[in-house]
Image (cartoon, rainbow, N blue to C red; front, side):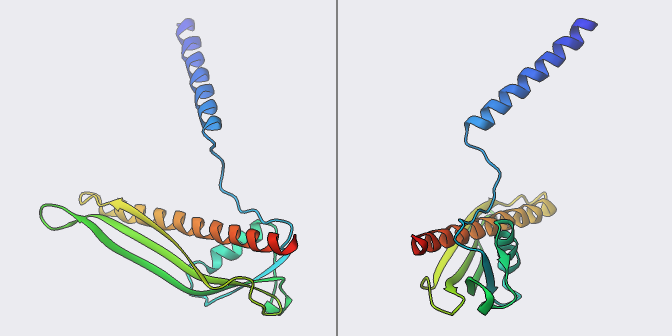
Length: 173
């Protein structure tokens, strides 16, 4: 009996080590938002109902910048000008029901400094994802769509942060 317990523990240890090596070797890393040292304060100017506004503010705070109370007090202003959220069927079953949906999220934004000078032209960033519909699991479909949209919003925030880094890095250099 003692031998079996040691063997199982050894197998678990080897399995854990293999998983750790594979994960480390594939380039996996936790998603984070990092701003270069060029941005100290920001202001997100956009309608409160904009689907990306709160997540962008949170992402910029997590990246180390402080949120200014007004656009005039901020070193960088991110103006959220428009948004796009669409869902459409991309394939159907034999009974003419949707088998897959495509979700598209997009944001039109521009960057300005605190004085209102434009640092970038207005630009769209969009993300699209396709997911399968399981007619036997309606609740699971809704949860999957919510999860996919959350991941897409995080990708949009990361793209805005990369744009900020590119613009402020070239401006500082």
